[in-house]
Each structure stands twice: as structure tokens, then as C-alpha cells.
Amino acid sequence: MNFRIGRKEATIAAGIIIVLFLSLVAFRVVQRYGNNHRDTATDTSAPITVSDVYLGTVEETLFYTADLHAENEAEVYSLASGKVIKYNYKEGEPIRKGATLVTLERQEKWDEYMPVVVEAPISGIVAREYLDVGELATVATPLALIVGGDTIKAVVKVPDVEIGLIKAGMKARLTIAAMPGAVFDGEVHGVSPFLDPNTRTARVELSFKKTDPSFASGMFGDITIITKQKDNVTCIPVNALLYEKGGRKDPYCYVIRDNSAHKRSLTLGIVSEDTAEVIAGLKAGVKVAVSGRDTLKEGAVVRIVAKP
Image (cartoon, rainbow, N blue to C red):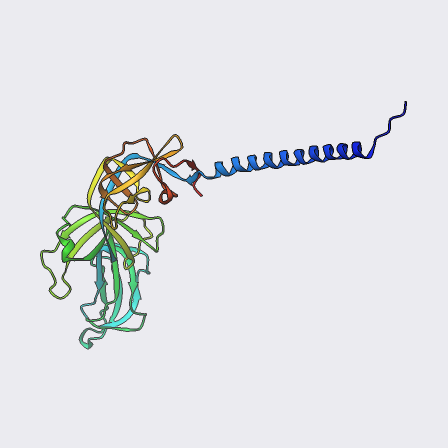
């Protein structure tokens, strides 16, 4: 039996095929759109980094700079004029008090054959020799500089608005740009009761333990005086803080719980350069948003990412 497909039947079959093809294409488009939509929804979570609230130490500090000096410094002079015959110690060498540092050829005619012997007035290190052999030294000409001692001394000039915050015995730290990584611990040794009427500043003397032998008198240092310190208090990084108004009014942060952000008002205590004391509003152990906190709102879905 022979079957013939007429033009009408062929047209219907072609239409069915076209409809099936378009349906398949539409299904694939909808499927891809759905996948992309789900990916987009996932990407709408806010990427943030977090920090733990912890128990730590906070400090109120004042910052100054100063020239630094050895505990003992002595410029050496001769009691009589004469030409330098010999330095018995080189720069950088240790010397004991009473040792002959320099020998001079006496200039007075009445005793020209007796050399002038100049002794070290203190024990320490010969830091500098000012003259060369053959040069003339008078009683007003320094011959050498000797430095010694186990501490570093500094004097800072403190403005009148800050001088009342500083007391003798307060702890201090010293860092020196020429000695990267070195930190010297010390304290306030004395506070002058006199205020310079021209500069409105008072002198504050400090001393630091010389724990690094590479320290050289005359270096320049950065000094931090600790005026108040609290231990074992609730702390967060300063860069986790936000404020409702300008300045430092009405502080708050975002606590991160179950991948969502929750606004928390705070009462702060001491706020240092990098750490803030939290008196009320947080407990140790929770996580707070750090980077990305500016874009958060209450209940926002977040995604914690590693620090760069």
C-alpha cells in the first residue's frame, strides 16, 4: 500500500517540528536565565572582613619627638695649651675614668719639656676626637667627647595644655627611625614646674633602657608617653567603628551573626590610634564588620572574605 503525504500534511508536520525546536530553544534560554539569576542573587551579598571582639589593653598617649643623648656625656679639655702629640684611644674604643686620653706638647716656655697629660673624666666610649696630631689645643678647645651609661636621655617640650597630663614615673616608649624595629622602654624622669613664657612649653625629661648597643648619642627619636592604661578590657579595632553624626558622636558597629549584619550601639572608653575600648554594647568573642562596614544596613546578608 502506498501512502502519499499531501502538501497540507507536510505543512502541518513542518509546523510541528518548528514549534518543538522553538520550545527547546525557549527552555534552554529560560534555564540559563534562571541559573544566571541565581548567581546574581548570590552575588548581592555584601563582601566584608571581620574581626573578633577581644579582651586586651588600651592606652591614652601623647606623642613627641626629641634629640637623644647618652646617660653621661663629657667633653674633654686640657688645663694647659699645647700641640697634640697623641690620642691614646681611637673613636669607638672604650675608656676608663682616669686613663690618659691625650698627650700634648706643652707650650709654656718655663716647663716646655714636661708633656701635658689629659685624663678621661668619666668611663665610657670615645665618641669623637676633635683635633688632629700637631694641632694646637687651648684651654677653651675641646679635645674629645666621651659618652657612657646604660640609659638614653631625652628632653621634650610639652605645650601648656598637655603638661598637666604628665607625671613623673609614667611609662614611655622610644622608637628611632635609624634603628627600624627597635623599641626602648622608659619612663618620665622629671617634669619642670617652669613654663617658658615665649613658647608656652615646659621641659619634660625622660630616660630609656639602652637595650641595643648600636644606639648613638645624637640620634633623633619618636617618644610616646602613656598617660593612662587599662588592661583586660573589651576591645575592637578602630576601623570597625561607625558614627551616627559628625565627629565621634553616637558610635556603633555591625555585629555579624548567621551571615547577616546587626547594628549595635556602643559606649566607648579609651580610643587610641588603632584600638577602642568598649564599655557597653559588646562582649568578647563576637565578630564585627571591618572593611565593607560603610555599606551595611540592619539585616543585610554578608559574605565574609579573607583579608587581602
